[in-house]
Picture 1 (tube, rainbow, N blue to C red):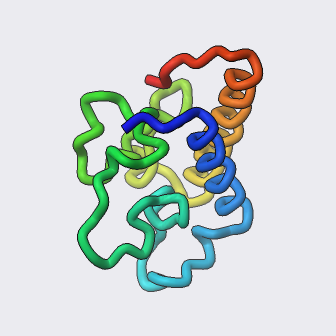
Picture 2: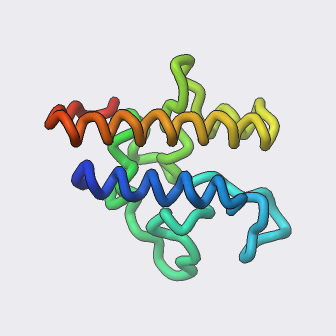
Length: 128
């Protein structure tokens, strides 16, 4: 389900604020395990959902996931976060928590700036 650029921008801004406040470093619901970026955030449509999961196709960030990976159990783990195509799936296996947070923060800032530019100029390319 495609979200409006304004909805996507608002979600990204909320996620950046959550990351910058240390939201993944001070877990309230699952201190016994590492926190998963995007999934353990209030911006996730399944955050603290202990019942039937909502489809990730309803997520405001689904359009950032490559088409062949949108049906994965956790598609947000497959969003390319830098020019090398590193994803959370890759970072969880190879990077430190600090490195992962730095890459995600940079991606959030760059994507927010790009969306603001697109909204201001009326240019709306689909992220892929």
